[in-house]
Length: 331
Image (cartoon, rainbow, N blue to C red; front, side, top):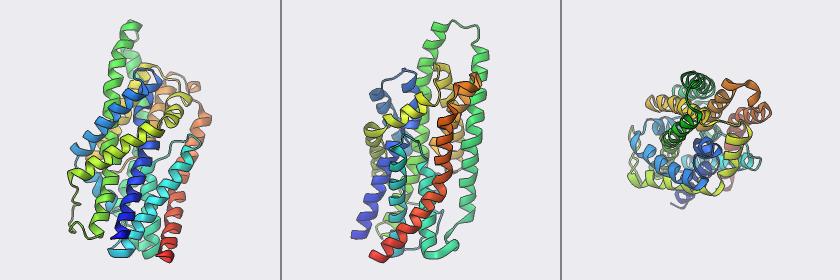
C-alpha cells in the first residue's frame, strides 16, 4: 500500500508540473495580447480545464493507459513511479530555461522506457503507439497550417473593417477561444493523467480490472485542481516564451492561433488520439505569425523549442528506463 501512495503522489506531482509548464500554453496568447490579466486568464483556464476533464469522456485516458503492458503488483507500480518521476525531472529542467515541453510525450515516453526495463520491446502496444504518432503529426503539421490559414482568412475578411471595432470583436473572441483551448487542454492532458492515476489505483488493487478504466469524479476534480494550482504558480515563464518572445501577436492572430489549435485538439480527442497541447498551440502561434510576415517569428526561439520537442521522446524514454532499474534495485 505504501508503494501505491508513492505512485499516486508522483502522479500528482506530474499533474502539478503539467499545470506549471504545459497548461500555460492554452492561455499564453490571451495574456500576451493584453486581453486578460494573468490572474483572470488562470481562473478562466482552471474553470475550462475542469469542464474539459469532465465532459469529454475517457477515450484519451484509455489510449494512454494501454500504451504499454505493465502487468500488476510491484513491477507495475515501479513502472508508473519511474514514468512520473521522469516527467518531473524533464519538465522542470526545461522550465528553468523557459522552454515549453510536451508533458504528453514525456508521459508516454516515460511509460515506454519503464515498461521496456521489465518486459523489453514486447511491452509496447504498437496499435496504441500508432495513435501517438498520428497525434504528433496532427499537432506539429496541422497546427501550423491551421494557424497560418485561419490568420489569412481573418485578415482577408476584415481587411476593410474599422480597426477599433475589430479589435473589440477579437478581444471578446480571444476570451472565447482561450476558454476553448483550456477546455481542450483538460480534455487531452487532464485525461492522460487521470488515466494514469486510475491505472495506479487499479494495479494497486483499489479498483477492479476492466476493459475501460474506472475514473470517479473525485479523480477528475483532483487532476483539474492540481493543474490550476501549477499554472498559477509557475506559468508566466512559459507564457512569456510562447506568447511574447516567439511572436508578437495582434489580437486577431491570437484568436486565429487558438481557433486553429483547438480544432486540431478537438478532432484528436474525439478519436482518442493523445495530442500535445504544447505542440498544437506552439505551431499554431508560429503559423499565425508567419501568415503576416515570416520575419515576425523569432526562429531562434523556434529552433530551441523544436530541439526540446525532438529530445523529449528519447530523453524521457531513457529516464523512465533508468528510473525503473533504479527503483527495482532499491525496492
